[in-house]
Image (tube, rainbow, N blue to C red; front, top):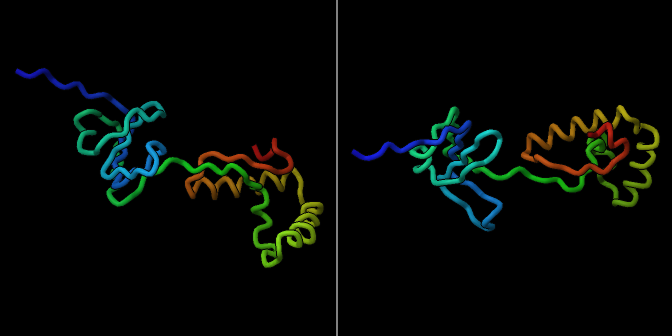
Length: 143
């Protein structure tokens, strides 16, 4: 009699039509699954192999979706989300010097930064951004 195959218990298994990993680069994997346990990725493998290797507490099947790593925004001014659309038809120097800097002098405060950061970060999360570096006033409020 063959020995029983022991499946590994995990928290989550995500099956996706396509997975685009960071490495190897320029690679798109079709019909792959991501196994997650304790908040960590433990395996990336073909979807067909996943059920025989893992017993997942939760399984998400995304047959028409792409699974990609979270985006990184390495330079943002999140609180400026509250200034969106202000004089956006001007050349950069005029926009900054004649419109943005005077508005910042008048309105920027710790509360402005908190509110603008919350808006910007919520928008980033909704679009897949998971890490950011914000460059603005009152960094402790942005954090």
